[in-house]
Structure formats: structure tokens, C-alpha cells
Amino acid sequence: MKTIMFDVDGVLAEFILSFTTLGHTLHGTSIYTSHQHRAWDVFDCMTPVQYGEVWKHINNSAEFWRTMPAATSQDVFNEIERIKQQEGNVAYFVTARHGVRAKEQTEAWLRDRGIDNPTVVMTKAKGELAKAVGAHFCIDDKATNAWCVHWFTDGKCKSYLRDYPYNADPTMIGSSHVRRVKTVEEFLEEVERS
Figure 1 (tube, rainbow, N blue to C red):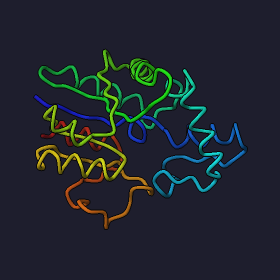
Figure 2 (figure 1 turned 180 degrees about the vertical axis):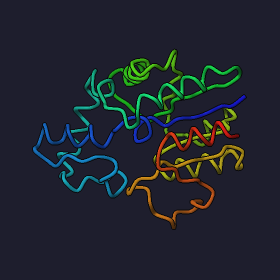
Figure 3 (figure 1 turned 90 degrees about the vertical axis):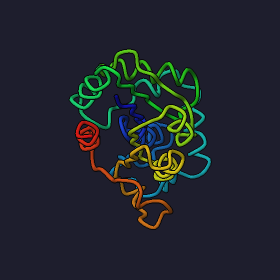
């Protein structure tokens, strides 16, 4: 029996590409992906006003979260569903998304990729959630979330960080307790081996 937490944006969904594409549409700014993004929550291509306008558009959109491209292959979603269907396993899809029907958009996005009846939890408090649900495995792209999961669960939850340039600071407190993986496939292999 395994309880697994998946972050959505940056792990399963390509948020940076979607955010910068919307910025380009609204303001003509640069488009780039998670693999090209250099600093967490910093978009050098946008002014603070432009950044705020992009978020305002997202928060008022009934489609932004639903139409985001995947950050991994369909085979990964199939494997997640297969693991989720094994007797006793539980999967949580955890996100800090907000705005118009963000939870419903996220559930529909996951269903579109073959995840049957996804359990989506809307929270920034991922460490607290991991402790509350007794998570065994967690993958995130935000380094502080990955570390908090380890810390709140006293290391009982194996915490993984999807490796990107924007989360590559090796001096972050707690970073030695978090395993970096290049892909979600690598994370799923670890889940299966345990």
C-alpha cells in the first residue's frame, strides 16, 4: 500500500510555458519552458505590472488550467493510473492553483490524460498535507515544498524534486534530504521499487 502525492504545475503540467505564452499574447514578452526558467517566481521578461496582469487573466479564466500542455508523456499518465489502481494505493494531485473553477479545471485536465476520478487537493501546505494523509512518496518542483514534506513527516515520506534550473540551489536548507530526479518516470521507478 502506497500513498503518493504529485504536484501538478512543473511536475505534470508545463506551467512556465503556459504562463510565458500568455504573457506573450498579452504583452509580447518572451516565451520559454520550465527547462529554460532560471529563478523561482521571477519572470525577467515581464514588468511587475505585466506579471500582475497575467495573473489577473489566469484568475478570471475558466480555461487556463484546463488547456495547459503536459510536462511529461502520456505513458507517464498511464503509469500513474496503473499504480493508482493497484489495491491499497492512493494518489493525491496537489496544487496551489487558484482562480475560476481551478479545482474543476485541474480534475478535468487529469481526466483528459486518463486519470480516473483524480483526487485533487488545493493547498500550499504540502508538508502538512503529506503528514495528514501519511504520504509515502511525494514529487514537487518547488524546493521548499519538497523539503517541508520531508520535515513535516520526519523523513517518513520520501520527498523528490523534479530537477530544473529554477530549483537548483544546492545550499537550500534541507536539500540533502530531498532526492532530485530529472523525470517523472524516474520518480515512478523509485515508487515501484519500494
